[in-house]
Image 1 (spheres, helix red, strand yellow):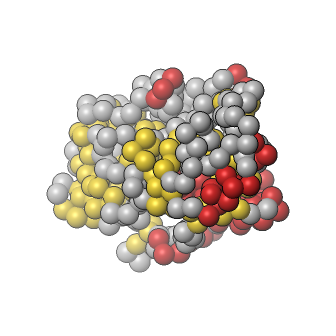
Image 2 (cartoon, one colour; image 1 turned 90 degrees about the vertical axis):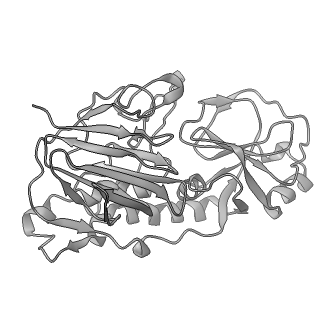
Length: 340
């Protein structure tokens, strides 16, 4: 019998995500994928999965999961209270659960999004090469939408071996700065100098219209130079559109593929993840960087992702790394090839 995780209770917006559905935007297919790729990769690393495997992204409040079969190894990346059958257990550490045991993931104490992964990954059929959930088009994931109570998630691995557990000290992860870094353009010439100054010098707040598709911000009005409509063109991750209200909208993982508002800037990749961890009411500022600076920052980010397995340590004194296990990790590939 295939081992499953039964969703005893679901968080408000828990979805299966991986790196996203890359290469299909030209056909109108949204990318989706993890809003915070770093924490997504941490959850996978803790259970020994490749960073590209599917994991569940939860928002504010996590899920309750009961093992059917097993045993199963899970890990949660994010500062949340965890309980196995009402006994507290640590986050940032892998856990081996037996048949019938229930893991309850509480509310996040910091940030907006956390991730849980299971050793071996989910036995789900990819759609266009990805298991990422895009709820608006009901594509990917378990049934194209957020998890709900009663769902049974099939697992690739029927029984997790008793090999001991891994943990990660979150203080070793990169510190995220206060400012959200952007590269101006591609339509920054559609705004007055005063409008660009307002964008870069002002304080903005995340509004209540904030989800995986995008964040509407409130703050200083950004003045257009000549109207606010352009011929629709492609929307990259982190694009900052400015509609007629003069209030910016930052487009995130579930963004549409094209749009007709001018884009004053694009948030650099690593800072899209930082922005996605903000919640309504949080304040932020933007800071412009050059293309060369953005590329250097992104190279360091890719190296961090590739090196995550090297940050893990043993939980409980077992030998986390033997030669066979080390040979199974690609410690430098991400630094060379990067993320698509």
